[in-house]
Length: 143
Image 1 (cartoon, rainbow, N blue to C red):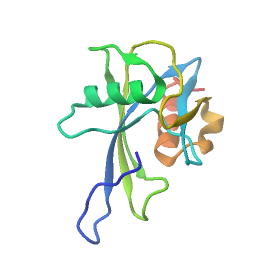
Image 2: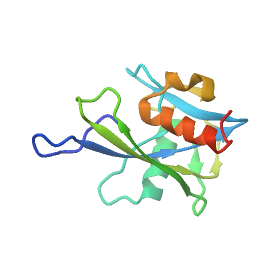
Image 3: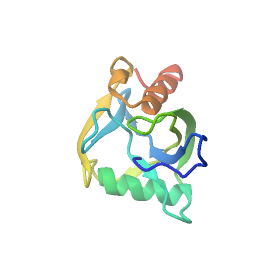
Image 4: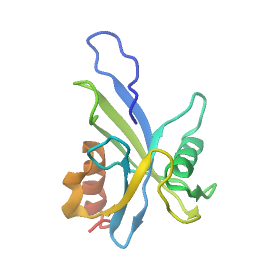
């Protein structure tokens, strides 16, 4: 989620990103990317022509070493928020999906660590993830 979309001069850029949302025991799986000070959820930008399902599946495999099961993706939220660590005015549109998975969750590639975040720790997350934690808390998924 580090590159920004092109925008005409004076128009804020919007990062179109996708994320895998995985909650266990009332806590959200978050990742720490190399060089980042806040936590994110596994995900990122789609490749050209890639569907949401293909992009989320690829990102989950690349970042946390799991294979999402085809046909189990379910959209849980679309969050529009200030983009962390980007040019002023840049926003992120984060489309979030849950899905069943196969394999053990493990940090991979640019991910340097995994953390399970509850509502009380949401300030350790990037703004869009913080909002996701709040939404999940409101629905009773995250404690």
